[in-house]
Amino acid sequence: MAVFDFKKEYKELYLPGSKPYIIDVPKMRFIMVDGKGNPNTSESYKEAVEILYGLSYSIKMSKKSGNQPEGYFDYVVPSLEGLWWFEDDYFDGNVIDRKDEFVWIMMIRQPEFVTQEVFETAKEVLSKKKPGLDISRARLEDFTEGLCAQVMHIGPYDDEGPTVAVLEEYIESQGYRTEMSGMRQHHEIYISDPRRTAPEKLKTVIRHPIVKV
Image 1 (cartoon, helix red, strand yellow):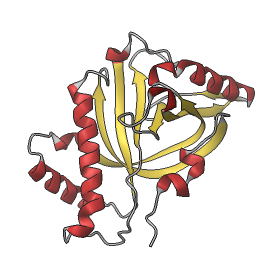
Image 2 (image 1 turned 180 degrees about the vertical axis):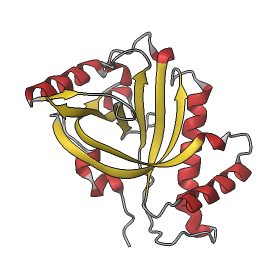
Image 3 (image 1 turned 90 degrees about the vertical axis):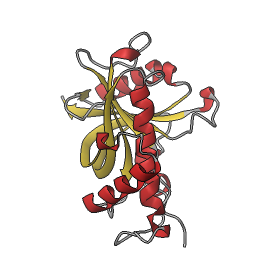
Image 4 (image 1 turned 90 degrees about the horizontal axis):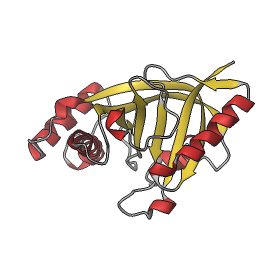
């Protein structure tokens, strides 16, 4: 039986091309961790990512531990995602020298069978494996992003500015404007693994929330 891959099944969400388009993003379930600071240097960020992957793989591998949830199906753990903003400024893609000011929510999508009970079981499993992690930082939450425009950025994360500019020009040309508030923020989905991919080949979905003008 084929392993379910969210990226392949929902290409419109995860595999846009180089031309922006508008999409209505449905409700999805995520494990989330909040934080602040530079992702390149922050221990908080490093721990957040470790927690997210640790919990996600604990749930995926539950089939081998006797704790398989009701409705379980085999799947590829989805990509890491991040919501990014500054507390006092609009995010325009130009972040050089401002990374210490970042506020972020890192998250990984979960299958619908991941209930609060399944999540709590995964936390117990991970806390035994890695007692030094502050797993209390993680939460399970449904997020409905709604109407957005998105595009694929190819290249280093620090070079996203021009891609964001193209996205913003497209949004305006279609009679919309970007409106960031609450959890509807500058959104990045990391399709490539930076540990295994050359910086110039990194693929990152960039998604902005929009409203009609």
